[in-house]
Image (cartoon, rainbow, N blue to C red; front, side, top):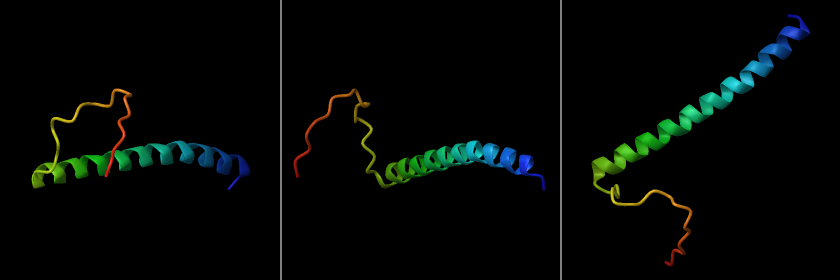
Length: 58
């Protein structure tokens, strides 16, 4: 296989790998939300992130 083809495939594979990683992470988040919803532990009243960071005390 010519070196040019290997370089082209490597460049394209990096982009495809990033898309695959984003898809995988999104799927993991969706499954976690579905499981939490099924178990009744999903807080549906939580506001969206607005940039205000509140200190959490344990």
